[in-house]
Length: 470
Image 1 (spheres, rainbow, N blue to C red):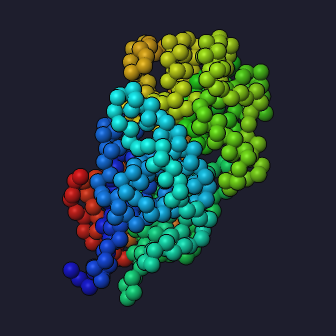
Image 2: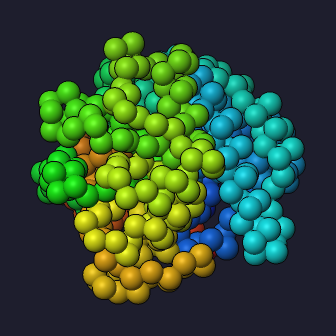
Image 3: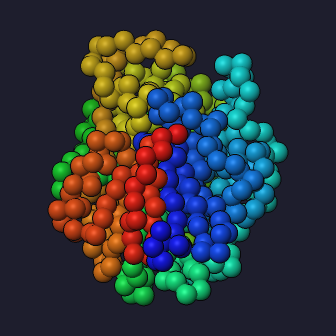
């Protein structure tokens, strides 16, 4: 191996699709020492990958630290499993993400535990594993570089995907060698209604970089997205229809509440129509957005529409059965968990009803099943069998993920792209995005991350690609 290749890393994704995000980095130092760390460790939601939730494919005791991009469960939901299997080092994230992780992990455990009882299987981890995980969290401010290891420093950069979300710059050093600089986008968005997104500092833009880029909507360009949400809500409320909106608990629910508030203020929907928010986690996060220090602009803490009511177990059945026109926001966003299943079971067979999805629905989820089904088709789940009579609509406009052109705009600001590795997307989407960025940006090298390959990387970029399916 050449002199300049004595200091290098192996980088591997332990996920193939959109969920279950986990990247493993193994650093090889010239003195023979090794360092292992991971970026995110999330739950899989795609049915084809569910069996991977119990498989970490590395020795948890050898991991020196864990970096977290944001608090969505498909990025953090297996960290308690990591702890259960012997990890006891630090978990680094932004301060806001640390606050948001507690309710996310506690709720995720309740869902997993409930499912394991129904299936008569052992739960992935315990409540005590969640508690131990939370004790390992260490929160940092944005745009502050911290030494977290004698050879590693990290910088968290503001990311519009979510409150607290970060792009993470990892700089790995060794005396006498150029640094290996890695930038993980996590799930990325260039703007956010609740806070301002800072531009990337010049000193980072000029670094020689390997960038790990998400590609959830990597085959969609912003101009191709039909903005139908407001029109759908307005037209269906005018018809006297009830509207069910399955929504992610963290930030998507709060954003939709804000949009409904604006529509009320513009007299596009009547304030007499009751709006319900169902889901303990959605309600908890809504109160956090209103009352806690999460980096939200002060004026945006007033995002609640008129006539909003929180739903609990005691009031849910009355609301489900009521024929009064209503708008219901309910978790989960893909409709496979939480009270969303109850509302869909009740309202799917009804005329003059809209079920409006506002985010990505993974393969194998109820949301994807409804998307693929024709009207009049029988929908069967483990809890109900119903005929699809209600109108079911989808929109990507409210997504917290950047579209292909927005991702490329992000990458354009970097002047010394050595390597771009693409993750977090359906396989065909990652290929299309790779072709697009090669045409538009012409980086030195590109690659697609999945469980079948590892990439050997040094400060000059790609050394070689290695086939090692796990």
